[in-house]
Structures are given as structure tokens and as C-alpha cells.
Length: 222
Ligand SMILES: C[S@@+](CC[C@H](N)C(=O)[O-])C[C@H]1O[C@@H](n2cnc3c(N)ncnc32)[C@H](O)[C@@H]1O
Image (cartoon, rainbow, N blue to C red):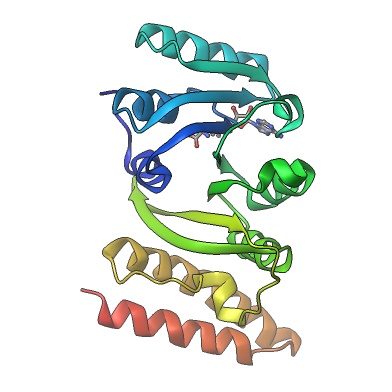
């Protein structure tokens, strides 16, 4: 099977099994190739906004004798509105861009979503909960010393409430070493913001509580 680093393996595990997945921003298509090779999916749609990465996907699929992937030059879901698929992955991009792709996708994005934001995790969680998406799972990976989150979400149509700390740590918190690494990063960023807030007389209560929660998880997880 094609090799996957820890981040891509975490995304691969989150996809699980389905008939067809659309991978928005597929770039190298390693995720789709691995899913096809292990027969976790029957077919796939690879989309990218840029021709270069899409060509890389085509070449990689051909090199692995994978013929069940359709390729589309597409900004988000734009060029695949006529296609049917039961899951969509949007990974390796900023959280704001992922939110925008989902928002513009409309009903096409009302499928199982596997999201891997590189930045703006809290903004992505807020977007999902404010716009009727439910987060069913969060899983974490560490690659080259850096923690990553993979968010599994689906459209429920119901707006969800959340606490400040949920935006930064999620509501589903696995007690794994990878989540511990994630907490350490969140805590370091919160400490920086707390310093700034203390200097400018800004709000510190939420930040102090977030840091306290990070400490709890880093203490209890071995
Ligand atoms: C850093 S790569 C991530 C590749 C892969 N998904 C991963 O996680 O390893 C991001 C890819 O998303 C593509 N991309 C950026 N914005 C996009 C958009 N609006 N619609 C589709 N693809 C997009 C880029 O061209 C690039 O190939």
C-alpha cells in the first residue's frame, strides 16, 4: 500500500468506509490511492483548484494502477455539483478556507465531512457549530513533532452551543498522547494571548480557564 505519514493516516482512519468520497484539494491523491488500495471505498473524486496538483494526482493514481478516480479542476465543490458522493474530505488547508468551501458548497457539503485544518481550528469549529454541523469525532496525530487535528462532522441542521474552551480543544477529547501534544500547543498559544490581554487590560478569564483545562489533560495523560 502507498505509504502515509501520521497526519494522512489519521485522515485515512477517519474516512473509514464508503461508496464514494470527494477529496477537495487532493494534490498528490495519496489519501484516495490508499483508500482504493485497501478497498475502503469503491470510487473517488479528486478535485483541485490548480492544474499542477491535479496532474500530480492523475500521475500518482496511474502509477498505482488505480482507475476508479475521477479528476476535476474545481474551486471547492463548484465543478462537482452534478456528482454523487457520500463523504468529502477537505484537508491540509486553513480552517477559514475550509469553512468557506463548506459554506459555498451548500447542500453538496451535507455529507460526511472529514476536515483537517492547518490553522484557525477554533474558527472552523465555531463555523460548524454555528451553521448546523455536528462534530462526531476529533482525532489527533503528531507528525515531525507537530500536532494535527482531524475533525469528522455532518450536517444536522441544528445550531450547537459551545464554551470558549470547546473552540480550542473540541468537545470530544481523547486521552491520547497525540491529544496531549495538541493541548501543549493550545496552552502555549493561550499563554501568549493571556500575556497580551494582561498588558492591554483585555479579558483574561476564558484564557485562564482554557490554560487550566490544558494543564488538566497534560497532567492526566501519560
Ligand atoms: C497543502 S495541499 C493539501 C493536500 C492534501 N489534501 C493533504 O492534506 O495532504 C492543499 C491543496 O488544496 C488545493 N486548494 C486550495 N484551495 C482550494 C480550493 N478552493 N478548492 C480546491 N482545491 C484547493 C491546493 O491547490 C493544494 O493542492
